[in-house]
Length: 94
Image (cartoon, rainbow, N blue to C red; front, side, top):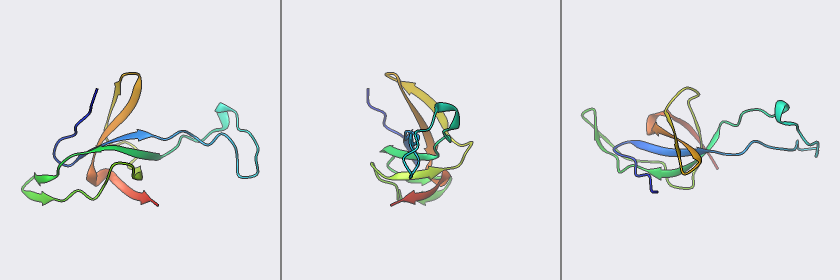
C-alpha cells in the first residue's frame, strides 16, 4: 500500500533505537532511550496552506527530528508511521 500525504504533510517512520553504546556495551530493552529520529518516507506537494504558499523542504530519505507530541500515528501493513506537518519538523540530521 502506498501513502501519499496531502498539502504540507510528511510521512515519517521511527528509526530503531541503538542497541549498543559507543563503547560496545549491549543495552537491554528497559535501558534504551526512545529514539526521536525519524526517516522521511513520503512528502506532500506543498502548495497553498492557510492562505500562504508552502514550499516543501523535506525530501524522501531525510533523517529528521520532530516535535514530541505532533502528528497522527498510523499502522499500515504491520508498519508504524506518523503523518506530521512540515512545520512540526524541528531539524534535519545530516
